[in-house]
Length: 296
Image (cartoon, rainbow, N blue to C red; front, side, top):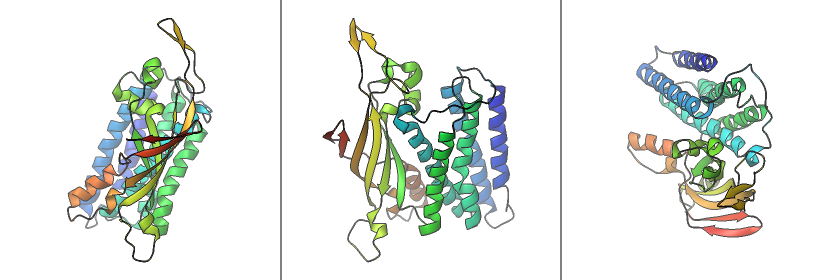
């Protein structure tokens, strides 16, 4: 536990040091606001992860763990999503605070990668987990996706989004999938869907009638998982239960909330934050060689 606290403290100090630069500019108040708010959010989130993931495990020396085949790679999707969205939001926030484009890329764009690197170190010192190079590569992919679009188009035309629903599987392995909604949201990969949300209007140079806020979205999920690599046969009321593990593909419509016109700076900020979530909408699901229509 002491090691975890040291890693968290080191990350927070480095984070605050980066935002302390350029403090004499006309955007001093905005820079201070951004620095302290990022400090608070980082502290709160790392404390949450420590409670959910690491509290019940002992610490040990730094070690590696190959988890690339686990959970049908949904955990890797989660890493890419987290670093992408953190980078996107931080680059926008640093632009608001008056930072140069170079610092927006190097500090804001890589903030998600730096943050998840701290999480990965915590994994590496935990007896229940380990340092994963697969996670690091997924982190780099998400950050690169955000930075690349900012550099190429000065906007995010293709976004990585997230949606979640309560699955039926957590109760069969609550220690691994979460004992409450508080932890299942993070641990139960059966209920997680990751989306690539594309804005067609932004790719059409000429004037078009396509709504600027309307996106098309392709999702990926998996189901039937009560273990990382395989399932155990369960017994319930003297009956044996076995769940089939399978991948799921989705197609749906979505909304890019950042493209909704409003003069309110507050609403713009709210829309930007909410844009990490894929808007609930009927979708087509392809799984187990079958096509299914979902109303959610």
